Length: 270
Image 1: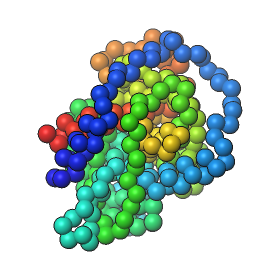
Image 2: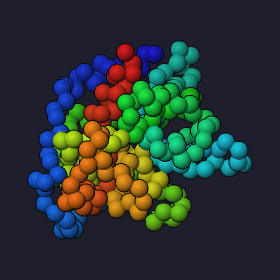
Image 3: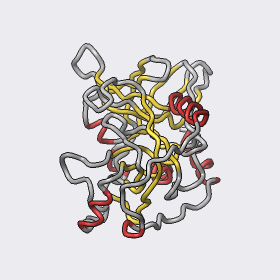
Image 4: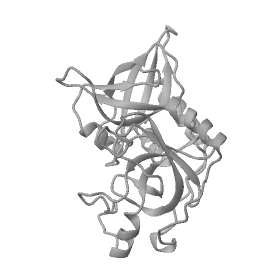
């Protein structure tokens, strides 16, 4: 497909990816001072950008109504030869799809619901907590602007998505959460998670965008802080953090870096 060739060219221009080199033990401990990181105008502009590139992932195998599973990001677009329709690619988390069953649907920012198909198998993503969906539409949608810079400790970031109705927000509507990156691990957690940030990500925001101050995508949301069940804190090489590291890691929400997504999709296109 032509989008694969275009994506490889775009990603090549981004330059080489430097290793993520901040260790857990080198950062200050919470709590952090609560300061307003964004001006009102910045927040309004970024919220509008986030709304345009964030979608809701739905599942409806046997029910009359679609059930919300989580969020996703409009990642690429391929125009068809007839110039009447386009194929859109949406990045989300694999665990978002696992929360439901096919067929999946995507609700775009204009409220329309489109049937979607998974186009990447889990093994092709090398065990990372990512999934790629595609849908065809005759409408024009905004594609996320991808950052050429790595996420860095201290950066202000915004998370966006659609919390589930049983989450803290209880509305099922679009929300944004602002904060700062506090950890960038040199060794990823299982699923590819490397970016730890203070944004209060809720259930349902998984798969949504993590944007920098310029409104550019730097990562994909996936884990909220202080999980009440399970143990997501295992490094991808099978080793475990120390008790002190685990205590610190659990304070933050976690995202998968954009560079990881790029590398996986380039590998898939070859």
